[in-house]
Amino acid sequence: MNCITVLYPAGPDIRFDADYYRDSHLVTIMNLYGASIKRFELRKVLPAPDGSAPAFNAAVNIWIADEKAFGEAGQKHGETLVKDVPNFTNAMPTIQNDVVYGEAGKDLNAMKVGGSCLTILYPYQDGDTFNHDYYRDSHLPMIMKLCGTEAISRFELRKGLSGQDGSSAPLYTATINIYIGDQTAFDEAGKQHNQTMIDDVPNFSQVQPLIVPTEVYGAAGN
Image (cartoon, rainbow, N blue to C red):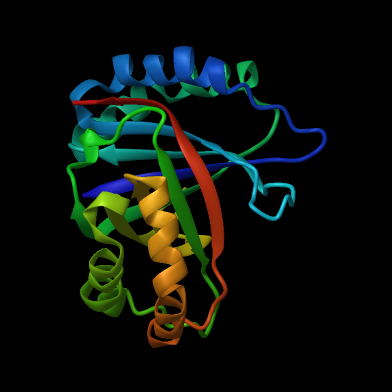
């Protein structure tokens, strides 16, 4: 399944109205695109554990159920959506096209508003050969085994396909959502197994990822 990843930047002069996005922009898109979207999810970025300023205000994923219908809706309604953007932000987002490359746990639409999600972004770099197959077949199952389904309700790996234009390289070669089922269990598993998980990273990438804690703030699905 293809998925669009949208990242809204943060900064001292940047405005982002998550309530307007959730209550109006998201609803408008779902009304216009209908069943071509399997799930539309808005996540607010939470403060980093070390207190550093977040790089993003929000992360959005749009999982596409019907590529043809989605494209037709975009051609028909794209201008309407662009005109609505100043109502919730004054900044340009990063947009890229992904494909769901691996998953474990509950169904996508089982994720609830208010839940925590660890969003992990591996930047695309020339010369880095991110091994999506190894991540899917080894790293992801290892994490699920070590942490358990109580700690992680859903784990999704997406492979970056292209930038928004469909031809340029994606900004991120891999984007990952780890939906946390029980924060206490997740933290405890991290204390016990963090080094094992870190030691496995060189098997699939040499690039330092961005780790972004988020909260599911709005969602709709079909």
